[in-house]
Image 1 (cartoon, rainbow, N blue to C red):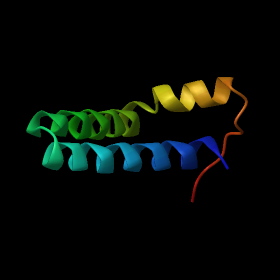
Image 2 (cartoon, rainbow, N blue to C red):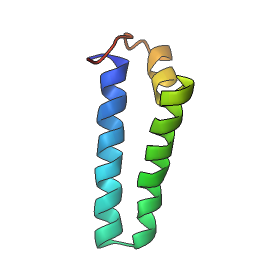
Image 3 (spheres, rainbow, N blue to C red):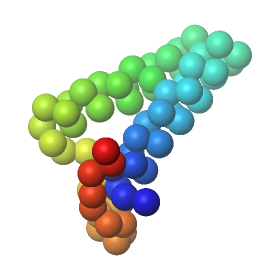
Image 4 (cartoon, rainbow, N blue to C red):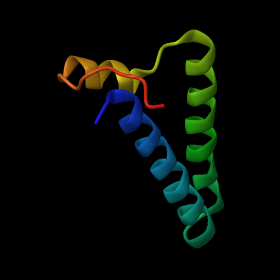
Length: 66
């Protein structure tokens, strides 16, 4: 599995968890989904993703997910 695929999986999971927590626990959890969305948008413009950098340093191979 490549770093790009892991980033997409983690981001999608975090958004789903955030929505569930906002619904069942407290509405302020929606801020986590907003943070993940903003981070995805900025990484699209700047080509910098903190999770991707961490994964690459951990030895996960680089590659395009598509």
